[in-house]
Image (cartoon, rainbow, N blue to C red; front, side, top):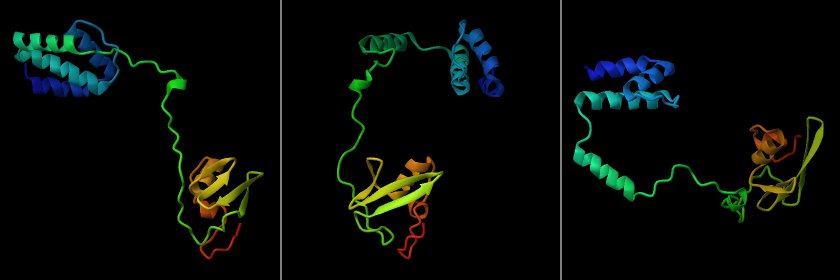
Length: 163
């Protein structure tokens, strides 16, 4: 058996054909539909059949290691209340740009028939009760797509509001 040719043939097979080949070489069905995994697994099996399997010594050692290992078959289920906190808290530092009005200023934008109000803070922007680091983040929260925040709110490089 030429293992190289067999592997080349495996790489051209469909997932259905690979599943049949798996059943042929292992003597059992597989639930996997992952093409690359099946190719590697079948190639390993063909190679071990052609060139010999693990030595008895290696097989005993793997069994010893497996017995010593605390093997978990499934990940533990964690209730949502026990999930680690993912929200960061802390000061937000936003470099001051000449296009951004002074803290306390209110920016408004009409978008799709609604008026959106954003308050300029010393370290960010407040919209809908949340603080954002950038106007682009606020624009994304409003529209659901990426926008240049200065463009969305009509703040041009000359520092004038052109909304």
